[in-house]
Image (tube, rainbow, N blue to C red):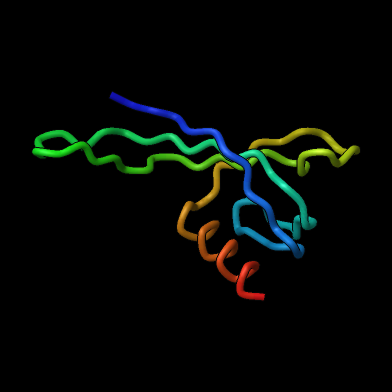
Length: 85
């Protein structure tokens, strides 16, 4: 069994991710995370298998819409760094 979760993430400052290759501006971005259920456990547990970031940021005009498969841990670290200030 697999599942996909769509959400929005907001960066207050420009940020970089290796998969994108260039700095992205501050803004709110659409994010989709695909997960698969781990089998053989006595409780439901999920493992992230793909994290997709949509550019440009929501509400920003210009440039083509692109989807980047990014490293979820790297994205989490970038969000934490952004929030820490």
